[in-house]
Length: 88
Image (cartoon, rainbow, N blue to C red; front, side, top):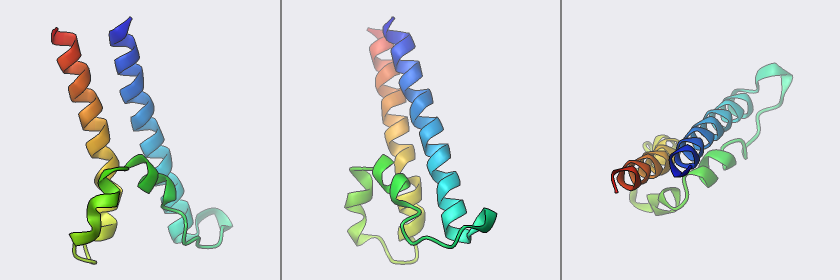
């Protein structure tokens, strides 16, 4: 039962990250007739907490990329914790 919950958690996080990236693209580029939205990346930022809050020292040119990749750290950590729990 625990393995199913772990896998489901990782899959749900990955799907939410994909949806957040899609919403970011739609809002950033104004796709489908939507006006560009400056808050389009909020879901990506929220999925990347706490790592996205620690990006103050990142150069401005790299900050959007680092914030966009921050949720991958959370997904990797949850997957690693699931593997660790599965071994025990």
